Amino acid sequence: MKLFDVYPLFDINIVKGKGCNVWDENETKYLDLYGGHAVISIGHSHPHYVKMISDQVSKLGFYSNSVINKLQQQVATRLGIISGYDDYSLFLINTGAEANENALKLASFHNQRTRILSFSKSFHGRTSLAVEATDNPKIIAPINANGHTTYLPLNDIEAVKAELIKKDVCAVIIEGIQGVGGIKIPADSFLKELRKECTATGTILILDEIQSGYGRSGKFFAHQYADIKADIVTMAKGIGNGFPMGGILISPMFKPVYGMLGTTFGGNHLACTAALAVLDVIEEEGLVENAARVGTYLIDKLKTYRQIKEVRGRGLIIGIEFEKPIKEFRSKLLFEQKVFTGISGANVIRLLPPLCLSMDEANEFLTRFEKVLNEK
Ligand code: PLP
Image (tube, rainbow, N blue to C red; front, side, top):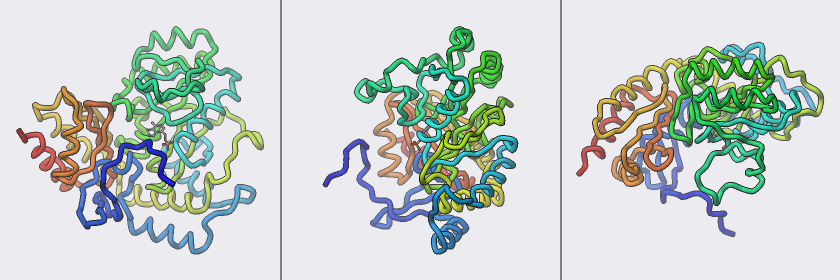
């Protein structure tokens, strides 16, 4: 059987990782400035993470959500403290798409509405509701074109007000920082206004922090720069450092009912152990602060290169926009300089390194980046 061919793949087989480096099967070492789509938060194969998962799997990998799993409560308590959302509740699932699906479901249970507001160039995963902005008509499924979702320009509060006033919008879903859409940051003033308008119209505000959250922006959640609270925060990627896991933080205004949400695998023993190991390392190694410090350094340095049109980002979620397509530039970074990076559209290089990226590694990246930049 062959694999369903939906990913454009580089011909590189990564077999090993350590910190911010990965190695292929020929022992070639790469600097990882992409962290597997922002998934690697504490670094590849962190010894504490490896030990905790190994110990747990030797005892118990999985039991069902029909019995108490005290590890889930430990994750909830720790997460509440580190995120500043300690009066919220936690529901655990497995992926980002699942986190957003559950958030939308919860929102519509709450206010019995069905319309969703989202923003152009946003990306919220492969969900059944139309919350995925793409310019490619071939990948908009009919079920995603059913009129549930209205896309508005980011930062246009008047456009938002004009929709919310109708009082038929169930939820507004917005990324803390747009990732796939090119590292676009919602203005702090826009988020503040959005919060106010959602409250005034009974609309649920969902902050998708799946890519921008978990310390990556230099705050635990990117929307915390605007000093607002969401009604629901969705998380995945960095929460398990590669162990598939997602979660939603739920405001106390939502009252749980048995059977309202549910999952087979969500919050299993191994996933919770991975999450606890990640939280240990984030705290012990000060990785949120590190993301802020190294990220600011990188952004400031990148802004000095005249060949670059614009650098956007906060902490270690960074978009480097060029005037022209960057496909060849990125290939050179990978094959000549042995640096993994990502893209956002045709002209933007996207950096999402592990949050433990050191100053030395940031400088090493800049040296290699400059080499490609200065090639004729
Ligand atoms: N939301 C955002 C902002 C994302 O960046 C992604 C994935 O890239 C998702 C949702 C979907 O997450 P997953 O691929 O785990 O379903």
